[in-house]
Length: 525
Image 1 (spheres, rainbow, N blue to C red):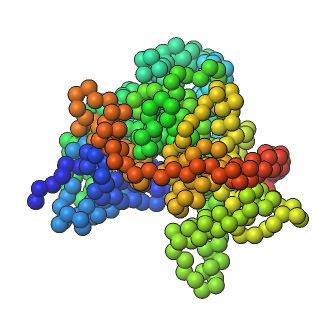
Image 2 (cartoon, rainbow, N blue to C red):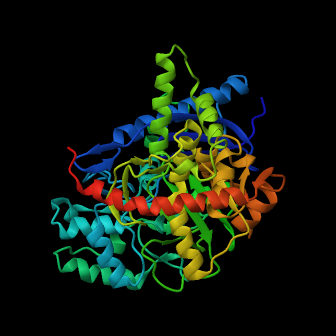
Image 3 (cartoon, rainbow, N blue to C red):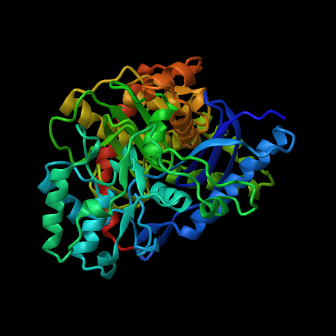
């Protein structure tokens, strides 16, 4: 049979590893996935690399089975592929490619001193989750392995390295490792020299640029799938070596692609385990904001990133509790239906959630200055404690810190958007997350049907761009003219009652952070 040349995207998200196969215009041909969870071990949020290997195999095997069921048992003819994953974190390897320390994810808030020192020295905000902050912490802490580091990479860079042997990163993912010079679209050479001087005071003799992956832009060649890489992804032997790969990207970059938000003046918000808004800038920020990251699009344009470590984890836990209560009553609720029922109940709650207030901090939160979290719920005797108000409170809590960060950008830089493109689990129940976020941010929120597969779809599109772009065709042109030309989009405008209700909720939320701070300081173990 005549097969369509396809493009494979694999993304390692915080709770799910997903594989998506598309054609060159972004139509989804098959998909697969594997659920996983982070671990909190020895005071560190981490994932084991064996879980990475198992997860990508499971996701790919499901995709192959899905494709075969739709195409008379055929194996997909993959023209190009790419890997995306959670940005930031710490994954050091030695010269033989061996892991030197546990993978320290973006969720960790253990680098406060290092992040502050580097931000001060560079005059550029270095958030705690950035790879360079983790490396600095390891150096000044005298960790024995630092002298053996031959490669410091991200999770996407690690998987790409295992598949191809190439030590590279897409510029968007690299911008969460070390600051990028917007002129060269490469690591900032001046800051690299500053880092080397600071590190040598503690006996670290290597040059930082020698151990960081090479930076590539969208559309560039990033290596071929090796025999070892093919066997790693598909132990059955059906996948052949030689397939080209696009540069590995972070979840922020693939989210921008998945929502067609890569041009100056556009923005998107990804809401799942974490929540972050990406606002593409005409130029860099006027000054350093400790709460705001400056990263880049996959094509290298500067982006203001409002990143919050906590979004849906506390909310998801409560949905699980309600589901268990239903099971005890003899029901067997479908998970998707349970989420729909509870999310829609929030729309019937009072505008300000009836006086109920929740802080969703399972882990630390840099925007509000917390090094660790304690999920917290408070009501007064006068509060109206109903299920509808409680669900609204939980959904508001998930995006309250995002609003605090967005207010910093609006007041400090005058950044304004016509709309935000939303994606992630917060928007999965039709219209609910959209409506509440539009009210919370007082910005129209849109959702594209074509971005339903999220970041895995976004990296598949980047793979298609690398292989199928016309000579001189920019990523912006490719997305606009080939991928999103007929995209269906649904936009919800802010409702004045929702805006007023969330503003009232936010005043209580900010006050409750004082209680949260006291709770964090109390040792409950």
